[in-house]
Length: 303
Length: 303
Image (cartoon, rainbow over all chains, first blue to last red; front, side, top):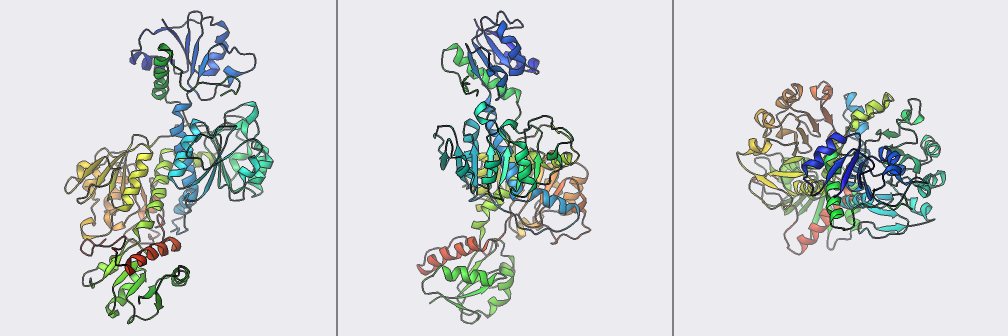
């Protein structure tokens, strides 16, 4: 009989949602020693895993699982994350901001406060080029919506080329040609050794002057100093940033004061308890019937 | 041999685009008496039509053709408009603003200026209800994108029910039940006697308090005083307005000063000369081969 331990800031809400799902055979414990299934936030779970002798499966409520895949952590169980629920939110975030930039939404808001009729023409996403750095489940959702808006879609991945909405793939050391001619560069990369500072001064220099960088992924994938240089000198049109090296972003950070930066305070995709519990419920069904679980994490890749 | 007269503020650009298309048998004139085909803005064409004895077809560069369908104007020719090129722009406008509202884009822009980390959760379009007042070619494009974002779509039309992306249709005197429970009411109605002040105090009162009215259609379809009352009293959450009874909106107009109104100065969908010329080129091919023209206007309906 599966024994579940919930380790979450929202433990009470999750417990209610999981109990309401009336899952067969499931009991819930507050004890590390007896649980074989764990559900919750990686940062809360990580200190406990060494003391869980019966551990077989952890379902993370987050997409990022860094604390559980850090060097020295055990890897003798199945780890699944919640990346499936973030795609839709990421789509609304990325396209909300891209459309707002094309439509000059903030400029028009500011002229409105001056009571000025503002007939400046908007731009359009149609025919523009978007580069997706990372084409996992979230990138695939972004690609699909980009095609809906008539964009040309480039995807940069390690190897896979299985997303039908990507027009052009790039891999390995072709990140510089990938960046050339992009109107938007969207980063949905996980935090991992091979993604660290992947968007460096050289990549930023390869982007055209009109380009905008959008990062709802991880702060660690961008060289923030290089990004500030590119934005300040006008070699890059703008950036929409949800994630940073240090969060909350310190009050004296340069990003706050830059006219061509929009900051969204790590709200691009939030964990909605009902949706996350839904992932657990479906994976629990698979766990009971020995089917492969959804959204499995590769310990070597770290995501 | 067809003889074309161009009456447009962008006559030189249109002439170049049309000449570049190398249309068979076409000659261009500056003379009312000899032309059978006219291309241009309805307001510029209207004073000339009585003096055009050979007139057979007018291609409007606008979607709205009010000056040409006013009482007393001749109706012995084929009138086509340019509604086909506005759908994509309208989609980017409407969804750009809906997503910006859900994502609290302007609120987050304002807290950014205060250097404040702003973890407030955004909303989502998923599962929300949008009501389309008018489901012509533009409304059908909006419906398709609304389904892409997982919305429930209601359509209010005179009679037709042929858009596959509308979940629920309403007609005639069922505008009040149509308005109930909507999150967004989007107006893409043409200006016509039966659409005048269709969105009145009663319709606005039927909307829930959380609803937002988006009008990229015509100013005449809304009772502006009733809208101001509803917005000011908080009975309606907000409005995104592209069109007004008087344009440009006078500097002392109440709308300018309202926190829950976003004004976009009649830029939702602009006539892009290349796209509009493309409509003319395709319709000219049909005209030569006696096929029905695209985007025909019904003189009785006025659109």
